[in-house]
Length: 151
Image: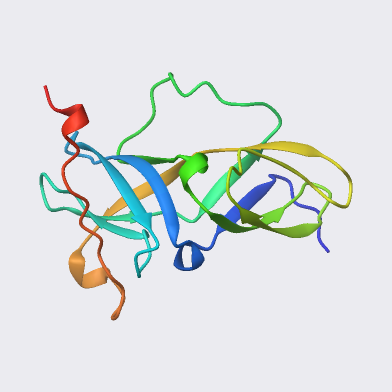
């Protein structure tokens, strides 16, 4: 058990059958990715507007206090909706204890070793990648364009 400077959780996207997140592509297109019980992971997405392939990151921060998401964030980006996502992740506390989280509504967590309380960040990093860089066998999800964001 090693002490972690920055508490974090690593998402196991391949083991998360229920994922809901809002995504903003680098082209500015906003769309919603819902993967409720479908086969495949939400790690690789294709923007419904520009067809860019996006790779969703697998790490989120464990925070001492909630973040105000009204502030500007770099694009592309994705934000989990923990209420619609069955979280499956391994958390690393600042005390060095690693523990599993597997449940819905993963907004907040408490380390079972030291009882440190954390708020689970909902934003994850998204990077644009070439389709040729997607590993063989990985599925690229193509969400439908979300009409909620249309003018």
